[in-house]
Amino acid sequence: MKKLGIVLTDGVGFRNFIMSDFISEASQQFDVVTIYSGLPKSAFDSISQSNVIFKELDVFVEGKTTWFFRKWKELAHLQKHKAFYGMNDNLVSGYPKTNSKRSLIIKAIYWFTYFIHWDKSILLFEKMQFMSFSNSKISHSYMQILNEDKPTHIFFTHQRPPYLAPFLFAAQYLKIPISTFIFSWDNLASKGRMLGKFDYFLVWSHLMKSELLHFYPNVNDEKVKVVGTPQFEPYVMEKYKTLSEDFFAKFNLNANLKTICYSCADASIGQNDPIVIRAIANAIRNNLIKTKVQLLVRTSPAEDDVRFRAIREEFPEIVWNVPKWILTRENHAESWSQRVPTDEDIKDLRSLLENVDLNINMCSTMSLDFMLFDKPVINTVFGNPENGLYNDQRFLNYDHYKKVVESYSVTIAKNSKELIDQINKALIHPKENAINRKSMIDLQISEPLQGTSKRIAKMLFSIND
Image 1 (tube, rainbow, N blue to C red):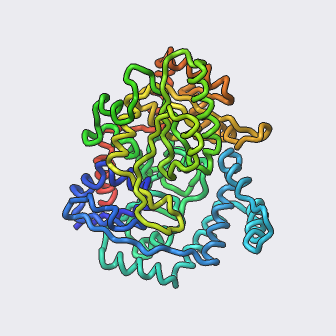
Image 2: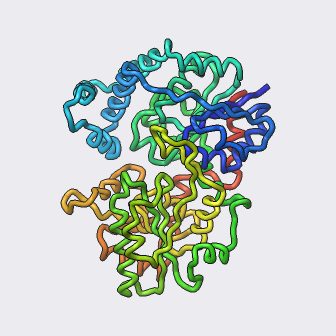
């Protein structure tokens, strides 16, 4: 029997692998599919396939020794690749600002890894991190689960979360073949080291494959498979399609006006969101936008809309789309990870992408979402070290986003005047950058959206032979 174990981490992974066709396709390829997740069982009630089993994982709390070795390998990885702006930015932002005991240890690790960050040293500390799990109760409990289930392949839907390391250790100890999916387009060139060693890697594109081989030179080229990403597959699935008139009616929008959508980041990096929203709303009120328009704001799924309360009161004409993601568990250390999307929200997002005329966001993956529907995109980066706003202009130098900027698939607005000028131009000439948008999509996603889940499921089945 062929048994697939799927390790799923959070609400975004739920959206990508549960709300796409992946579970349906995997259940057809494998005799048994077991979902191992930190989300509660109730989140998976919609799954109807009889050969799909769910098992809730106990929460892993990292010990001091494990933390030390993990921190060392992650900082060494960042030091090794700090020529990449995103890596260096993470190094700089992560440097402790206090002198607590833990902060002093981190500062010491920074000092040592500045000089010692060879691949061999990184792999040594990773090995020591994983050795620390050998006497862990939670590791043994994971081994017991895997011994009972006997999966023939384990698929990690995210390569980074450190709290999954004991589960990876258990699978490695039991010599079960393991694959992982590179979760997002910015993970390799901007984030820290992945959680451990995998046998196979599934990636979005040939670009992502080349990045993986650069940052992880020990990975065998033949073990990296280009499959596309299920992140955007709902946009071609019939179950999420809605009529244009339903979209305009639901959000009480005027179908005869152009619609601008501002999509927010989460509060940690979207600190300038209120400033940009206010700039757009004032421009509409003062007739600075030459086309008659209406503004719809979509907030981040990772949070509610509390921080926008003042703007909602100041500009009642703004239409709001607060993503309908359900908090599945209260009092969790990472509450954002316990929010999962509803079918209604996927339908809302797809209809929004289809029917609005222009998107504005701060260097978000949402730029790709709108490009898939050939909509013009403006990236707002109002902040820099000189003007006192949150410095979002630095994201333009991140390797993954630098490619977007240099491709001219988006325009960049660094202040209100540039933003209003670009809005006017985009509404009058919406197809101006269409070729560049298509080229960017082809670069970032090397396989068609149609059939993505089937492609991934078949690939997992084939590499398991």
